[in-house]
Length: 194
Image (tube, rainbow, N blue to C red; front, side):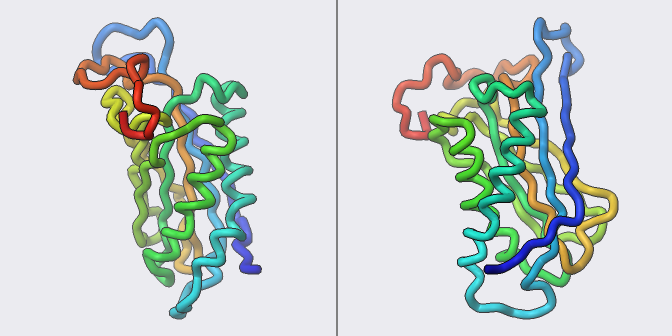
C-alpha cells in the first residue's frame, strides 16, 4: 500500500448569477474539492506506479461526498463534472495521471448513472500553480451548454513533493449559454457522447 498523506483539504463553491446579461432565475452552482497530499514517488523514478490508483480510491470518494454536500446534498441536481491534478516539481506528470480512475470512478459512483467521460487536466507546477479543470455534462460529452472550466489552486502548494488532486462538479448549464448543439433534455443515445 502506498500512502498519500493529506496536508490540506480546501473547497471552492461558486454561485453564478449572471455573466453580464440578465440575472438568471436560479444561479448556476459549481464547486471544487481539493486535497493537497504527499507524493510518495517524488524525487525518484518508480517504474510501477499504477497500483497506487487503488490507494487513492478513498480520497476520491471523500472528495466526491464533500462536493455533493457543498452543492446541497442532492446528487440528482448535479449534471457536470471534471477532475485535475497539479504535481509538485519533484514529481512527474504520470503521478497526476494516477487520479484518472479513483477521481473519475468516485464521482460516477456517487452520481449514479453518469455515462460521459470525466474531462481532465493535469500538469507539473510550482508552488502556487493554478489549473483550469475542465467540466462537461455527466451523461453526454457533446452537450455544449455544460462546456466549462474552473480555475483552482492553493496558495501554499503544491510543494515539490506534493500533489494537488481536484474534483469539480456543477449544477446546470453556463449562465447565458447560447451556442446551440445538443441540449441536456435531448440526450438520446446514452453512450456518453450524445
